[in-house]
Image 1 (cartoon, rainbow, N blue to C red):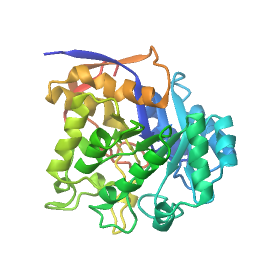
Image 2 (image 1 turned 120 degrees about the vertical axis):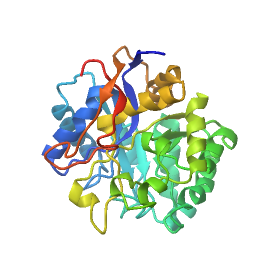
Image 3 (image 1 turned 90 degrees about the vertical axis):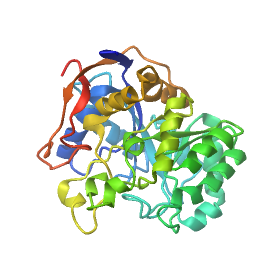
Image 4 (image 1 turned 135 degrees about the horizontal axis):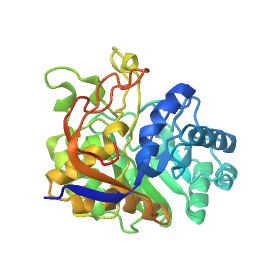
Length: 350
């Protein structure tokens, strides 16, 4: 039994940090910067990150508040809206943005101006031109994959034909289906991906939760996320995908902080704040499957390779020890995922 595991610092391919309140950003960036070499920063902020000026300003803010971890590198994206054009794609690439994130209208936090279902089913020429531009210059096309008008449990499955069409239309376009939650999405990556240009991020919480953990006996809003966690069968497929060691499945935490008052009300926000327990929880997950040797590929290597980034030397070490977090985690009242859980792994230097 291993008592210690050393891995490269993480490549977290999906993180929400918020920027509408600098004190909140200062608080929530630290757990990510502490364990990550790279983190892909989601652009569905309020207001959204949609221009080259937005990219520069937001990245500068993140770097300022994470300066105690100078090797941390936030990777910026813009939110693709229906009026996006190739000139915008070129301008944000010139200031370091690595891709676009597309949100179908109304499916998650701050997606009210996302792509309408009619636009997804019949993309206008300007979006076709954007995807062609991204395909030419190696940028990522990242998707929250749920159809807006579908039943909540079917939204991801109903979105997959569009992803297949996009991948076949632009075989050199790097496409990421974010935070997959279904057996159908796993099947798409493994068996319906002829150009091998579709990858998927998988969250820690989708690996351990099912819908029972949200509403079986009582409603537990801190386990509510989008896409919603689903059936034990779907979870089983996600677990098998991660343990398979397939390089097109890699970590995207989708850590999404919301204060308690935004979670615990009749219109509670979707989002799980997992970054404070992410690496400890993943160590526990891989250990429980006797697969600690597969952790580094999932957390640190496969995502970087798909994004076309070189590997790095910085590492973290985890050891067997008790670790827990408690609410309130900070002055803003964010409740971390699995609050008060007694993890069997912790960072060596904590």
